[in-house]
Length: 406
Image 1 (cartoon, rainbow, N blue to C red):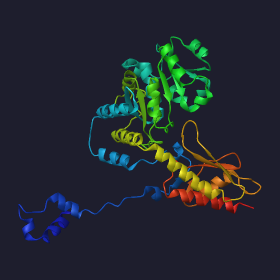
Image 2: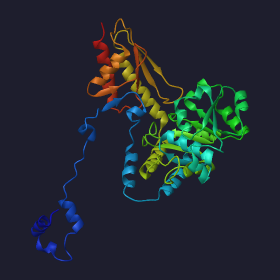
Image 3: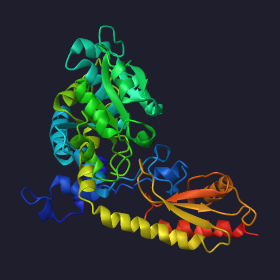
Image 4: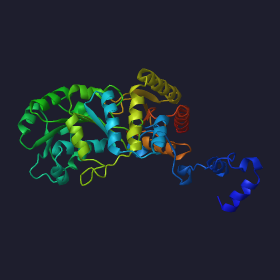
């Protein structure tokens, strides 16, 4: 406010209000004179396409939407300075209690959890080793995994410089263990493809005194997985925070043995000169992740599952009104373990391909993203749909399938 405007405003106040001792507090007066801030809708302003997410918690579609409680936590905690390590300390204790772990930390996503966890295994609290990564001269340098688990996500571990050793059987694993073996890594998404299952993997790790890590990035629900693998004996457990738990998409959780979590944090911010310096997690994300986890653990998941089934049934009833359309409810056994609706049709009666239907759903307003299939089928997830979006998706699918019917 300009000085002359302030004087003008003061001049119109009753004299009794500007006398010393009875004047309106300056702060209140300034607040009254400050115009309300107009919130900007940058998504619209920048011309970014808003979508109805009938696919699920995938990264390219920004994961999930944060709960109001998480957003409130982020906003309120942004108003004060704190010591970052103290935030991790306090939140880590709470997360560990909820998930039956000795210790825990919030990481910059599940990928970061895997890098920092591996780094902690390699370096412990040795500053020289921490500074040395990813160059492993004189250090343990091999990570054993099953051949079927050696997929893209393992690249996180490779950031630390380790060499991946593939095995297929317990006998091959035993033969692969040597003085260079640092860790054994298990990808939960590929459980069904490997010959060695969880319990045996953990038992082998304990037999050879080698730390075991599991990547269960998208493997909640079920909620029990948040403590199942800690109870089972895995030394490190990595999970995404921005999927089913609906925390910040850029947050994750690393939990496990106390000494390994301490070593992982030794390789992470606020410390510098280490492999994790760029994996900074701010106080708002750490606290927001804790609130998201707490809310998720305390959710009525039976009621939640029933809601998903009801939404699936609503869409199912709509699309089956179209001649030749058939449906099937499927639930992935691992990762994004929620009900999906597979929609198929006779291409001789519905002149559409899977890609055609995806483009038609995407190309109108509101834009709807669905999962593609093999030529004559698509799939729909209700996992991330808002309540009012279920009918929109059902109506649009019916409309597009009907228009293509002959």
